[in-house]
Amino acid sequence: MGHVDAGKSTMGGNILFLTGMVDKRTMEKYEKEAKDAGRESWYLSWALDTGVEERAKGKTVECGRAFFETDKRRYTILDAPGHKNYVPSMITGASQADVGVMVISARKGEFETGFERGGQTREHTMLAKTSGIVKMIIAINKMDDPTVGWDKARYDEILGKLTPFLKQVGFNPKTEVYFMPVSGYTGANIKDRSPACTWYNGPSLLEYLDDLKTMDRKFNAPLMIPIAEKYKDMGTIIVGKIESGHIKKGQTVLLMPNKRPTEVTTIYNESEEEVDQAMCGDNVKIRIKGVEEDEVSPGFMLCTKKKPVKTATKFQAQLAILEHKNIICAGYTAVLHAHAAAEEVSLGALLHLIDKKTNRKSKRPPQFVKQGQKVIARIETSGPMCVETFDDYPQLGRFTLRDEGKTVAIGKITKVLEDSE
Image (cartoon, rainbow, N blue to C red; front, side, top):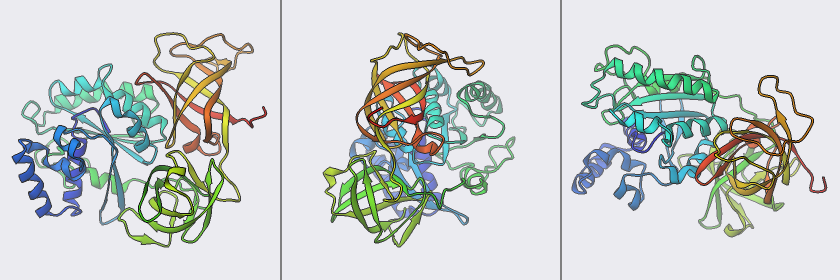
């Protein structure tokens, strides 16, 4: 993730090339096509940006998805769009990821544009935090650019500006963030360490990823798969990341919120191979039986019949108001993004204000809240949503509120209300 033109797709394409997932011949073909189109330096990104429009403008629109292997591990790359019009796609990508790679351009003027108000560096960092990403790699890209020339002073200047901001968002710069200088275009410090950079002696990007500890997986927990996308291909196919539990071929599962039992007929792993089972942490494509494609929407979930996910049209949540010019009162409407779902919601009632210093709740409900405040509110959705409380399932209990193209608030669900309450 990162600001427009920071080099995300180019870096992703080069990773696929360096790990042998895209062969030399294909890359030479892209290079020739890009040259003919007058877009010579973009050819690496074409491995991930496959759409005609994406190639013509050099902008990623949807979350690109690709797969690569190192000697130690298998990875899925989710290449998020940097343009602010496509932030909802970026949220969907972040909600399926374990590790975030924030790509920053070191080129003169480009870092500044991305980091100033309205730039996507800040927004993407915040959304990564709310989507549950706990490890961030900050790749300072384009270090080979003539305006930079692997200059340590420029690298340090960028670190100095980013570190306080990362702290403010809630990342611990010492334990949860790792900085590295790279060049996505030449491949320096991506797979192999670069001799061009004499002052950095840390690992390359892939070395660092290979040595990361894996996340704590809930293998024996009830099955939950938020559906990120769906399409038709000899039946209905759904795509998503297994957030908890495991799934087998032939298993009968429940599609929520419409409570439809359905059978899993085929499971495909990241590299499109058929597998008999998959477990939490895997990104999968699943063919389901007896459900039409138009009966499924992103944000629906597959779960076990024994313990289905909660569905609700009302819940209580703790909100932190980030950026909003005016005061926010009960009745305020916005779009809520949780895991892969996006739903129009309204604030039914403001219940308690939370004192930032003591974390105590006010006895009286506040009449309004404003930027910088925390509040407990009742949220009402336009249709039934699959949600869980943050304490039970963090991945399904976090959300973002957006309005007029800005992230207004981040929140966590504290209580799912039955419709009668």
